[in-house]
Length: 116
Image 1 (cartoon, one colour):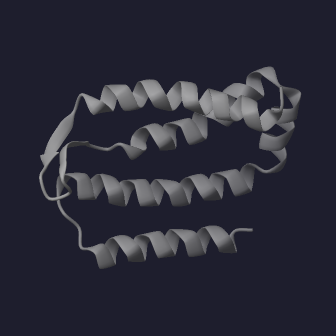
Image 2 (cartoon, one colour; image 1 turned 90 degrees about the vertical axis):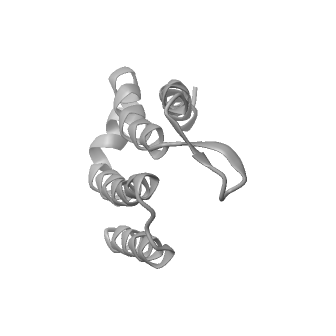
Image 3 (tube, one colour; image 1 turned 180 degrees about the horizontal axis):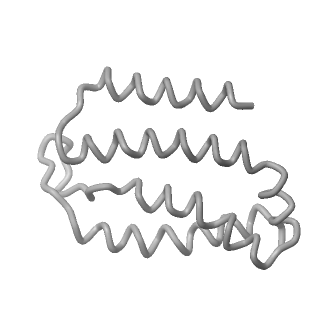
């Protein structure tokens, strides 16, 4: 099986159960037109991003090679993603102005782009 598919399946098997667990902790959100919105939903995405390559690397020499060779790029992308996640998590509990959120996202994208 191709490496990309292996990592995608590992990420899916991590993210789906975590999302289901987080779905139990919801808050009402009449503003967006939804009954409820999960709090800290990005947690499952961030966890799957870091855990999936590590899990696949245990069983695949190709994945070990990828993680070993590109660990700085993977780490930079993960740290920038964590920054965006933290801003989103903060917004889940106390509203944050859209300009601040956009600024954090722009900063994370710029830093990540400069890391290559």
